[in-house]
Amino acid sequence: MKTPPVVAQIVQHLAPGGIETMALDLQRKADNPEAVHIISLEGTQSEAIDQWPRIQHLERIHFLNKPPGLSLCTIKRLYQLLRELKVDVIHTHHVGPLLYGGIAAKLAGCGHAHTEHDAWHLNNRKRRWLVSACFHLLRPQVAADAELVAENIRKHIPLFTPSVILNGIDTNLFKPADQAVARQALNLPTGVPIIGCAARFTDVKCHDLLLHAFSKLPDTTQLALAGGGELEQALRALAKRLNIEQRVHFLGVIDDMPAFYHAIDIFCLASKKEGLPLSPLEAQSCQRVVVMTDVGGCREAVDPDSGLLINPGSTLELETALNKQLSSGINPEKQASARSFVIENCNLERMINQYNNLYHGRSV
Image (cartoon, rainbow, N blue to C red):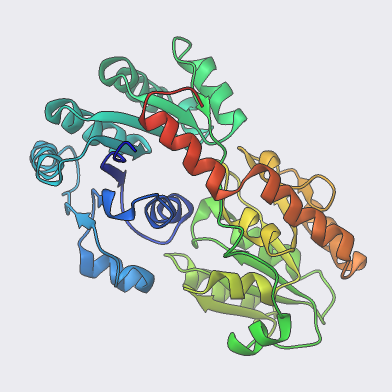
């Protein structure tokens, strides 16, 4: 049997998020996890652990602590690290790792796979020029995490035809479990419907819109927010102004994400921009119905028989969709449909197999 290649997953920073979780999963579930390294361009290990305690016991994670702006010394350090680790293939995520990782890989003689995770950023002329230049000069094997992302690449960089590899999640980890136990563990109320959202507190995730829509829902409804970020204090203040602070639960960064999905009834993501997000896949795999804005690849991440898609930026549409899901109550058929959708379309094993083919230069 051929020895698996040594792979380096390169991300901009190792903080709680979908791309970073994907990199951890690609290491954790690899045929030979010891042959997979994760390299963060920014930050230090201690800083990353402070933000994301779940990584404190992980091995084969490396931090380059890149300074702000263009850093030639970071390219040199990355090249040296690739040589030291005897890396065969790098896998880059987003434009920073594409640039730094791509140059270092060329110097080190490594193969290069790259995943585009967002449909929207190529609409920016400078970003489009940079990505196009990297594609043409560095010649990575390009994958898109959704068909919409692939369409955008074909539109803006027509000489490249990316493979489409939908993001996948571990359906054996994210599976149904007892709701009462999960709520007790997270100190959430029982006997009431709970809407949940797991996302960084940043402008693009539109938690403010979710809070406004939630304030219009019945008083018995609760909202659980998992995550952290620079907007947390502003969102807490908004909840207080809307007089809903007693019904909104800020849970912080949660290590046991399956328990979060078990505790809620409806998962909601009101983002104005996305690639193909992992959190709704995780929620549906735990048999939770979703409400999502129809942006980026979200349509490809939602079970059409149980989930609802709405236009971004509309408080009224979000309120209406949440009320519709609440009025449906617990529906075992919809819950089963949500999980089946993920198992059939977005499971981790399929994604890993497709990336392994990409690393070897085979068709996916």
